[in-house]
Image (tube, rainbow, N blue to C red):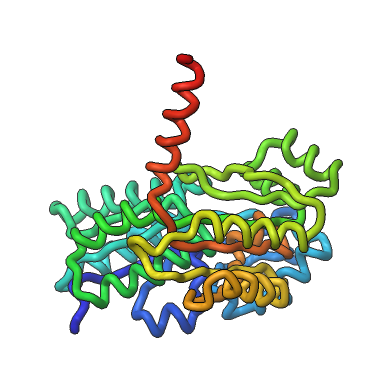
Length: 314
């Protein structure tokens, strides 16, 4: 069945280039640069590890590289939208969370400019996933399945804007230094984590910003916490039993975590991905993530808010 729309993404989705080609997607690359280095430092396009292996990339960060990232330029977005305007089907672009990046807003600005340039409204839709990395990977993987089922672009957008709240995420980083340098975590939080030699466990707020779920001493304890989080929040009421396990050059830990999840539900389909360069610049080597389908996170938060409100009123 021919797809009823063209599906695009950005390079923070953690699809491999093989995933991109097999799924018939177009991806828009972020960039990373290390300013002030005579040799240019660790810089390049986030081309999904085509030009540099994940091992080499993360090894350079271990040795002190501190690259910063940039969203696709307006020229990149505009060129992509001009090409999309020539197609005989609509286009949907899925972007990294607006809570941690300007990519979504940048894409919207570029689309407005191209529509003004062409003098017409284009059948191009931009979806803010409110996710990134492994959680984006899980959403996009199911998104490809939805596209291949034959849904329209409008139906897909409605699906994606609901489905993003059914993606549950927990990830562990070795420390919060890189997230702090990138402005994603307050300095005070990073200092406390470093002083305690703790492994932070993080997730997504409903608005696409990061939140700290807790800390743990040691990676093994952290992995057990991640397993418990999966067991507590997984649900097959609306989506299949699928868990996406991501790792930043810690493949063996990823395999172990995948096995721990499979022990809970041997029917679950375990997907694996590598944390790409853009997100890798902010989390550093050693990040480990577990993302899966569950109940609507909005309803969970509303239920908690109602309980808190009731306590205050009592």
